[in-house]
Length: 290
Image 1 (tube, rainbow, N blue to C red):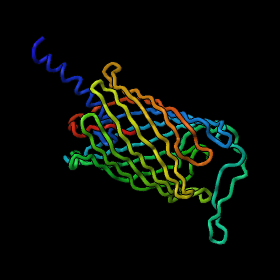
Image 2 (image 1 turned 60 degrees about the vertical axis):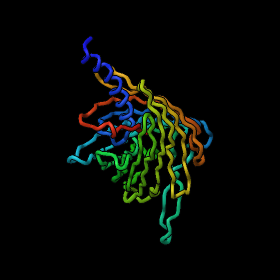
Image 3 (image 1 turned 90 degrees about the vertical axis):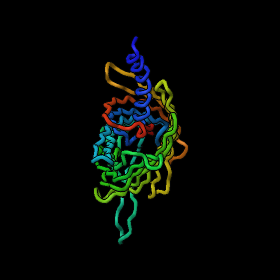
Image 4 (image 1 turned 180 degrees about the horizontal axis):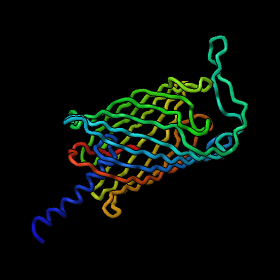
């Protein structure tokens, strides 16, 4: 074996490990197509409901000049749930003498809902180089009333700010992703949306392209003054199918806090197709919380 071939073989594992970390970075210059399957259990008034959510989450980076990237992250949820709602559970707002009053729908709900949920789309503007060792990104987030069943969405249009800060040192990555969404239009009878999303995360990627992660995808509903706090643990492995890099992940979650009828625990399985783009500096690598 000549020196050039030996060097190439030594470099390949390092490049693969770097790609495993890049996969975890929401603002890396990396086209990815995650298919995230979530199973949540013990939901509803009798704790016998369950929900399956398939999140289709394409991530598309766009280079803006020599210094900036625009990263478009979209979450398209398909939802199937059973026994989550019983009786009449839709909450509306009515204006009585100028005061919004919550009322409950009298329509029968059925025990199964199936269809598209509300789509969330984020636009992150991120410097191509870290700032004092930190990877930063910020921009707008949009909330679309795309649900095909009233029980699977809010029937509201929404928007707000989103941001990300993370740092990578060695195999470690830690940071936080956040957004705030306010509704501004939609069905006047449905409740307004006013929610804060916080996702602190930490992960470690080994030289064998295995990533261990811990995060919480917490949401605070300002209308109800109520937290929903699932704690997620996961492990993922980068491999190749032919020439295509693919990441496989499995994880579990425990709901430490939530409103009445919220899930108690769940499972997550993710397959991510990767389409690396050229010219991304290694410093941009960092694990993605999702």
